[in-house]
Image (cartoon, rainbow, N blue to C red):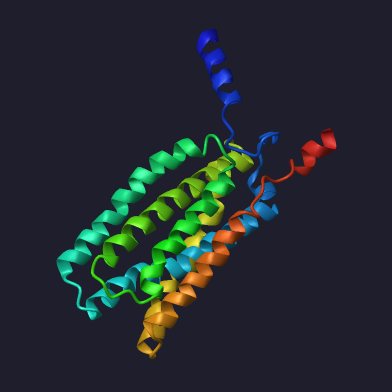
Length: 225
């Protein structure tokens, strides 16, 4: 109705899912794939998938080697997705008010903080709970950015096709991280080096989110202008 349309327009004035002053354009798949923002996005999250999968896979074994009880580890692991779910809701609201790249970078900082108990070799049992809680904050926050980035930067008309074009690359390459991590640990790499290497990769990928600024309009629209 005209009334609901007017309400939606008013609400849009107070929302900032993209950079302020940045208009939203509808990109085709080919146009989106040629933008630095999407290339950097794919590189960053492919890296994250590749290093986070072995991290999540082998942290349990690390805790077992420290002598932590299976019950404690189970409670900690259960705390992770619960925190992710809560933060996805909270940061979804925040993402309507600030540029989403700041939300993504903020999530990366929390992920790094969550890794510190493992990278620093914490041996106190409560570190399992601290890690999963802080890690869940970072993961939930980062997931909001990953979900909103494509429709906010490239429009909604072709968002399914754009996501479908890049997701297989991220999943296939990222899936190699688990076997590679297992091989490195079996070859004698210490958990300290293993976790610090992952920490560095997550840090670089998270920092790159700040560089993922909204792209310029597609060339065909600039030509029309």
